Image (tube, rainbow, N blue to C red; front, side, top):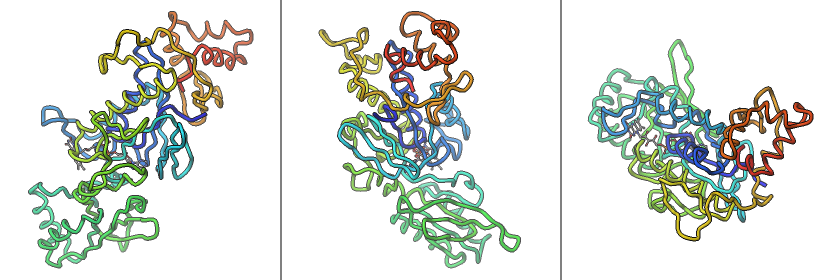
Length: 396
Ligand SMILES: Cc1cc2nc3c(=O)[nH]c(=O)nc-3n(C[C@H](O)[C@H](O)[C@H](O)COP(=O)(O)OP(=O)(O)OC[C@H]3O[C@@H](n4cnc5c(N)ncnc54)[C@H](O)[C@@H]3O)c2cc1C
């Protein structure tokens, strides 16, 4: 027994695209997989910080738009999002164990989409007391010069990986001792929070780490240091490149059932790549899970036209082993029109209708209830029947 067919770590563009793609299979004549996303901060990832361009100015998303589009699918497809920090992902026989700061979850497949740095609540302060450096942009030089002159005598905290020294040298050349400089090394798991507060009528900002609080007037997150050295890949033991980014094949596979997508796989760092790898791994993970459960290829045309003579098709789905039923199905409560599986909500009528549509025409919740002797109390029976008929088996 396990919690969800697919667990996705990270709710940036890569993770959310993977979730939507893995789950949207419902439009095919196939049974959808259960998908769950775990992320340590609010959805959207780095793409939620500013306006982002998919290609150029012609295809630009205003701040928040990427997140809103992807979150619409999360809601419509009833994909639960857990706000927890993943500490490790380990393979245990046939399953994966995902350990967070709160719980332990089990799944058949995992997609790692943790980005290049551990985004925390920095988005709340971005553009105000906190900013980011990406050298190569000429304005950085002007920005530093202006800051050092205007904030003479104040403190700036640089946050980044050990590769931050390159940016510090660049800053010191401009600074020439005008501002005090502090440095916080982000070792992947040590940064907890950024917080502003008032001191003697002035606004300050601090970095709260596992063991310390570092106070200053400004924070600079050095993205280049993260690009040179991954900080989010330490949750999994797998093959990585010389900069610590996860190595995959061209379909995002690390190993059987295990995938990675987005910035966590290394350069180039872009929205288009994150979404592309997210959708690819979402489908790949779905195919893996389907094969594991039903012993057959999932025909997800037009993404992968795979029909060959003699191959089983989706018209006959083989028996599902008890061990491949997500355990969330075993514990639920009914509240109004909603079924609550632990913390995960699904819209009862809509989801069951969706499933029944896949079979033999439309049924209403009323019809389902009428088919039971004691409608209200017998919802459990309906669900069991749907599970037995393999309609609800994967739909958590
Ligand atoms: C200032 C800035 C501007 C940019 N502008 C553009 C642009 O205009 N066009 C463009 O194409 N690209 C742009 N990018 C790059 C683009 O935003 C990223 O490439 C993209 O967001 C990567 O998506 P991702 O899902 O791989 O990672 P991220 O967006 O970083 O998301 C990763 C997610 O994983 C979560 N996470 C990390 N570790 C854990 C953990 N242990 N447990 C749980 N959750 C975890 C994080 O909280 C986050 O939600 C920009 C980047 C920056 C910094």
